[in-house]
Length: 303
Image 1: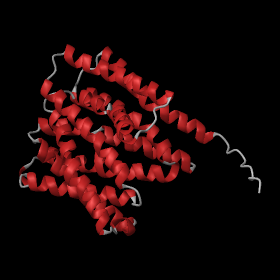
Image 2: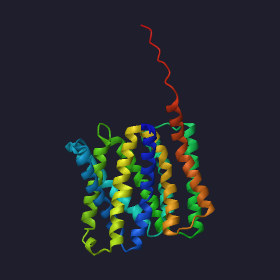
Image 3: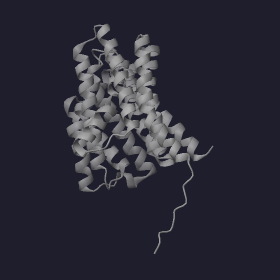
Image 4: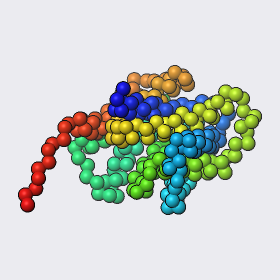
């Protein structure tokens, strides 16, 4: 199996792992855990796992300059905890699948904010992609209102999406000159410290075995494992090709929500999900097709 095939497999597995976050979070809530408590276990276990993994495989990742640690602290203390708390709290009120699909409106928000703040041009393909995403999210919202879904849950999910969009814009700026893996590890560690302060894991010894397993899975599957698989994929095939597999995240959430949580999947939601996936995939597929084309020979400029 070539590096390309392995890269896509790693990217697909990473997307499926990320897609399990809402389902595992919802399941943990049904077993009596609060949002901050769930997030403490998620980031706490993930931080320990990532430190151990890179400590054994590539210690250079853990070497960080003070400037790098400050960037990670800004992201991991200032933005990520607020976004993750809004996301997890929304699961109290609305289905996991709806929360996930609302979060996937973020490409629209990021693109529009980028155009507004950085004067980024919107070409025709991006405009079509945004239109598909808007239409898909419109169907998801319409389905939510048809089912008289909680406005509190929708507000929290939308807030999570907007903060995540801001997080990505800041991340793009702060990653210049940095090792992305180093930033990622210390963002997770910083976020873990925030939630350990908010909700110390004092109840962990009293949890039953199933709930303890859930907390470990939250740290392993949608966090530590998802991150390491994603970076391995990016190393093998590049970020553009790896991002194509991000379309598997909402699919994983919707299907796992139906199979594990028993959440209903209605036709209008399926239609909205299809439009969202098309909107996410369209620009990435163009990048993939361009990458397959042989490079044109460069002409030597005249002296």
